[in-house]
Length: 164
Image (cartoon, rainbow, N blue to C red):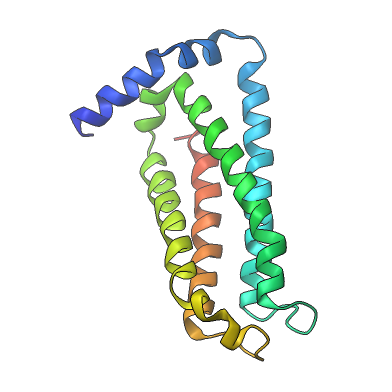
């Protein structure tokens, strides 16, 4: 692991936040439960949107309506998951970083997060041309599959952090 990363993780672990999360009796389980709720709020609507991009519900709801309805919920879930994730990491950052699942979790998380602007600043910029089409463009379907697979990987790798 790079020396700078070790230094930053040790600093996070030794911070007031890290000490508070480790020492407050019910803070860690509260953060963990809130983190899971944030993940659900992030991944649930994102998966529903991805499934719409893949054709599910195309007769019921347009892509733009699905995006306007579902994606703000995902953004709230992401904010909750990031804040609680950093707090949880602070409790034992150096231990988590040495887990075999850590590179997978953080790598897939980065990959998932990069997929979002690539989709929105790419194929979605021309959504008015295909909003109600029988089939979404191949690039949109690829982005949806990448999203489904990478977020699933983030969730699985996150759970494995406790066991590897």
